[in-house]
Image 1 (cartoon, rainbow, N blue to C red):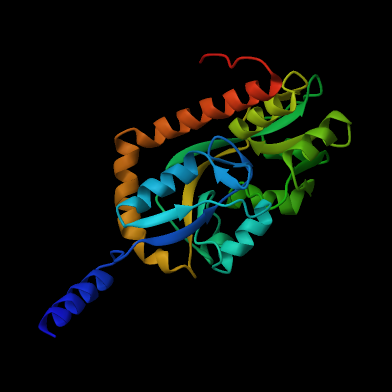
Image 2 (tube, helix red, strand yellow; image 1 turned 120 degrees about the vertical axis):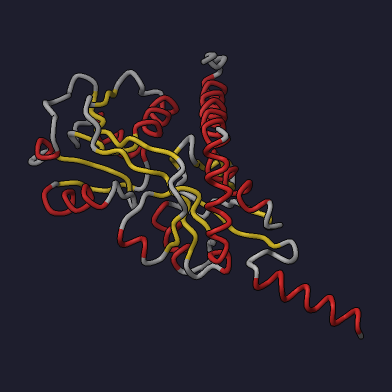
Length: 265
């Protein structure tokens, strides 16, 4: 009886200290087309984001699984309702803050304007997009300020995939495509159209990548520990190495599908 009471007391201390007592399983997911941070591979989401989340929860004795859930809109909805615990990468907006606990930022991501090759136009400010037909992907946000400008001033339609948006560009059904620079370039290469599109020289904005923990998830209480570990991984270069690792991995997968060797960086 005495031994049981001692064990119970230790267990309660661990619970209230915010440390996982036994091995648990967390569901994390993300956008299916945002390499090198996250992308769909088979039935899983892989990339720098998923591996980073696994590292962050490892010390808490929490196992992380990263299934493919669906398009970005669906993934976000599942997380808002608590069926997905963590989004491995997302931008910060006031609307999302109502549903997610945000980590410290872990990387920057430039957002740019893609156009069909030879179809560029003068662009130095957001107003230069007014009156033109734009496209972007469903569920994507590009920061509070540009989201508001897009909704109030621009003519933009949304498609489920990056491929659909690039197709609209190349068929002349859209003048521009707003998307993350690195992910857009990766996808253009994957689709074999890298020589058919280009990006305008000025960025739309530069956003930060965050990890978002659903406010309905039991793992939200670990945010202080997560941020402490995240800062350590940023400062020792681990995050940068993960992004480089998965960028290289994605390039190799593209080259393999094309049947040619990957170029060394």
